[in-house]
Amino acid sequence: MATLPLTGIRVLELTTGAAGPTVGRTLAEFGAEVIRVESRKRLDSHRGQNEAKWNQRPDFVKLNRGKKSVTINMSVEKGRALMKRLVSKSDVLVENFAMGVLENWGLVYDELKKVKEDIILVRVKGLGSTGPHATDVTWGPNVGNIMGSTYLWNYPESDFSTGEARSQHPDFMGGVTAAYAVVLALIHRKRTGQGQWIDSAQLEVGASLLGPKYLEYHVNGEEPRPMGNYSVTAAPYGAFRCAGEDRWCVIGVYTQEEWLAFCTATGRPALASDARFATHLQRTRNPVALRQAVEEWTGSRDPYEVMESLQAAGVMAAVVQDVEDQFKRDKQYEARGFLVSGDEPELGPLVTEGVPVKLSLTPGGVQGYSPLVGEHTQEVARTLLGLSPSEIETLELEQVLF
Image 1 (tube, rainbow, N blue to C red):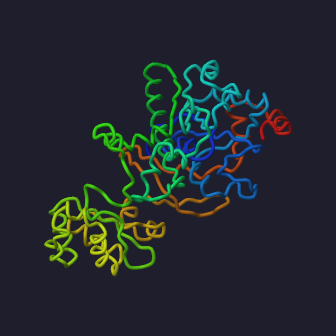
Image 2 (cartoon, rainbow, N blue to C red; image 1 turned 135 degrees about the vertical axis):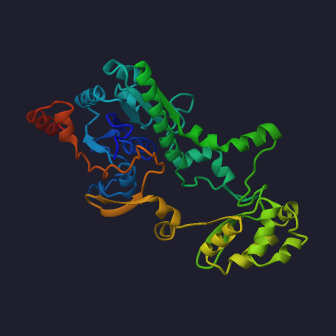
Image 3 (spheres, one colour; image 1 turned 60 degrees about the horizontal axis):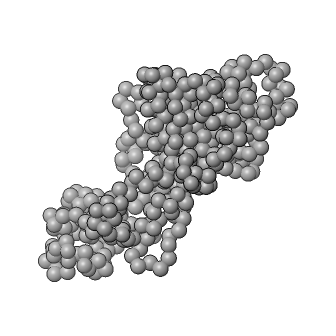
């Protein structure tokens, strides 16, 4: 493999959960050396509380593959001093702890610049690092409530809110976009010699995907409402029941030509002349009858049969896949080699997702397994910090390297 784009870049992580680790994982997949600094006194939430499972939790394994782990007790001055020495030998520091943690450790940007003038600091927060709610503790699932997505993820006229949708989209979107910002900062530094700090707000990353809803409010003066699985631009539209337990296929018919093609593909050309369905307007006015008509056909068929026959007719359709489908029946994943095999020290062989973008000359990839707690402490202490074996032993006994 050719030299990866970020080879030679060293990234330090002070992270937990999903958003911060996603930044480091994304950079690691394209060649950066990523060193997680953690402590046995308070480990990443995804490592869990059970010491016997610290290196086996699927969430942690997924988010931290290809990284190194160094244990440093940041609650003591010696630990913070070691961290600053690591900063002096690194290019980027990623953190996503609650506001105030970095400040208490003396690792805010102005202090980091005294250690390394061109350091790049990226702070990934639910609501950003400034403003009246910057200190509020958030996580991916409840960021969706604030940005309005869980309000919209509901059925019309529902008398209850979906509340916390337990979806971590803002975490992962915030992590990937922050990694993109790091690359931009590295380009800027190469041109100017200047580092900078990056203020990333998961709320704003997620809300940026709701642009059409903002336009509906500001341009048309209408409050967007939950629509369930219906659409004003397509009919039929939504997930339709297929044969088997909890099996579905999403179908979207946007034009009159597609509706005629749908009727022909399903062997029911008479539907096209049914007064209830003859035009897009009539179809949107009769959603219940339309759904019943569609499911009379889909309900007795395998969802892949539904998808493939409609796609062949030029109608948009896609199976609502479960995990088993993705591993065993998804032809696209298989053709692109998206699912890759790996071997974790304690979990053993496994299959996980690969890198979702493919560079023709410098393709990234999974760079190795996720680190055991403190697996690289002695290596980093010796090679980067220049500590002698006796110094390392003393710091371990003092629970500074811990």
